Length: 604
Picture (cartoon, helix red, strand yellow):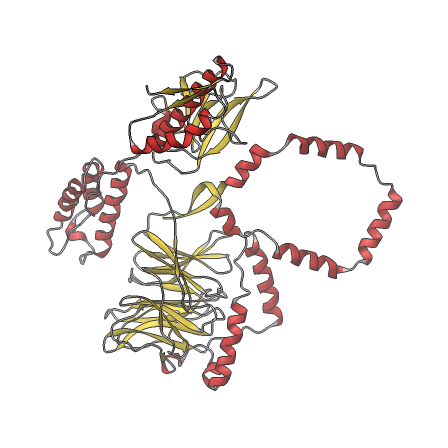
């Protein structure tokens, strides 16, 4: 199945809800009340002036607003919560979703190897390519008119095909060779197509073809000028904004009436292929910069890039598998070992992107999904379509409950092996990853004292359990600022998840140390009404909270000594008999004793 995620709430929105000054609301009301009514004559004059101003200024205004609009990616970077909904949910094995560049369609793979196009507005599906190759890859052309894909025939030979996305014409084999070709990639103008081919020495090399024969006819000087122009154009590219898909569709329809669409020169493309790389070893997963002036690919020892003519090969300071290129083509994103890296193209330092995404897994649900997926995969690829006369769905169901109850990888493997053994065939097996090392889940601390509450004092705000704040430790995570907690606040949930009857505050804050955390609170307003508030806090570790509590205790002792002595006696506590405590003692000694008649040193 294929799902979509949308941002529900961001940090900025949460902060605005807390920080919105009441004065602004009052000022708006005052302005609205004092604004004089305009007479009809003045309105008519204004309307006339607007009519005479012409459409040019309005268009400039719209263009400016469009240029200065928020970047959609900023909202994702600032996100706190998401909604997840199905886009394609069937009994088939639907996977590999690829939205079209114009945002109007979604292409995806469906079992066994079909490429299906979904119209996102109408929800209508149509099968563009029918086949059996479940490992096929594909890519949209930047204008969303074509799809290039690699596909294996009955002899297990893979070629590159290009087909109109609307299905108006048959697919054309543009590589046509008895050795494997795969991983198609487009330039931004759709005139250059790159792929990996094993046609020489059975090694994967980068190959390319101009899908516009005019480029084949250009002398080198003009080709260089063409690529220079494409580099400049690529720097002006912008991401498709939300709501722009419909607008793009209208503009495309209008353009089709006034301009003839450029057709790709596909029929003899296989005769015009160019070999780009010829190093020893194999290259893989090639990508084209949007300008088409450089190829980026994986090879032995890392990620490399080379110019359009095969020159200027450079190894990038990048690690892992290529995920994609920036719109301008000057950066490449890679992932290795769960870490993301952003490297400059054609060269420069790489930046490690810090991403923290802990996931709480329901083991029984995970086992269920793993087992069903394993059984479905065997059912799809087993050489006997009749599964040796077995009712495969019924056999799978018979072992499913055992698989769900598995608590270790070894137990799961044993149950899965029993299922596969029903087929009594060779070369079958399942190999789950090894058991991860046990990891502690330290609980975050908010620097507060609380007491459990099981009954809500506020009408309309029911909960199973809450925690009333009885004290906020000075200088702790919940102290000071617009996001501070207050004594009397009722904490009703963490990260938008309410407390269950048996939940503790510490269990709800597991794995939240140093992570921004949404704390849901019921708070009494100045008018005495209860209201729901969400605040954003950063929990500290247990050790850090111990230090906060100690510091607060020491400040309180010093305050009492100062009060009881009338300001004549200073106070200092020695925390422990160690080097670190000695450094603190030396630091605080002068401040505590300065100007005092005496000093009380507490060694308890």
